[in-house]
Length: 156
Image: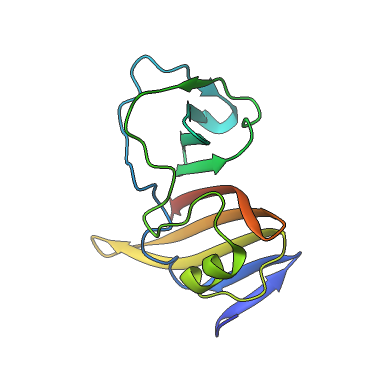
């Protein structure tokens, strides 16, 4: 754990921006035509693709995110697809990767088997300050990543 880091209720809170590439999947998609849409509270909208793993693209009124997992995501209808979708984020984190490799990539040691990491920073648009928060929820079984959910919000 680096400077500007703290633990709160088992979460690791990092003062600073998430590593470049944490916020998005390697395969970015903005059009989900023909896919079933899972809806939820606060304007949540998610689209789930089934490849070798499950891949969810999500958005709500506050931001955007994704989920990759070995298991069917709760409250989502997932559809097998022939689309060329890579099940990794832009940092190269993917399901099945070992915990130590992920710790090296994100610069945090000692991740628990169920670990939330929150990166907090400021960004400015036209001189106006916004809070940028990236929330990542990691799940490991026997040292291997089985589930990762990431959501990024910008608020002022």
